[in-house]
Length: 104
View 1 (cartoon, one colour):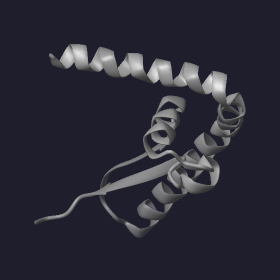
View 2 (cartoon, rainbow, N blue to C red):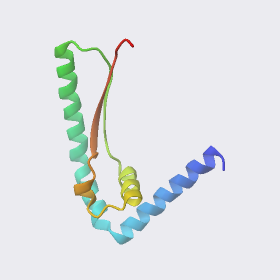
View 3 (spheres, rainbow, N blue to C red):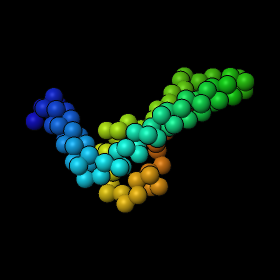
View 4 (cartoon, helix red, strand yellow):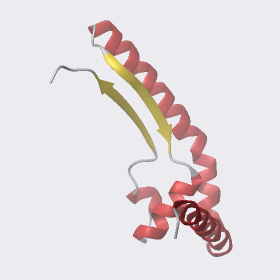
């Protein structure tokens, strides 16, 4: 199977997972969608604070990026890992990454 067909198959699987979750456990999806803006805001604020601290310390970085987990990623993760309580077991709803420059 070619790369394009694998990508389409994976997309189709994610859609099937989302549809199945809507039928089996709509409350989990509703809860994720309600909390998602808070995680986006958290990641943005942590990124801002980190950038300010890095600049104040005079540290040279290549990039500071942030993200909040998407619904597709959340569904994929709970499907793959069979969490009993995804909101208490998953620890990466939001993340910030600083890429530092250094001489090897």
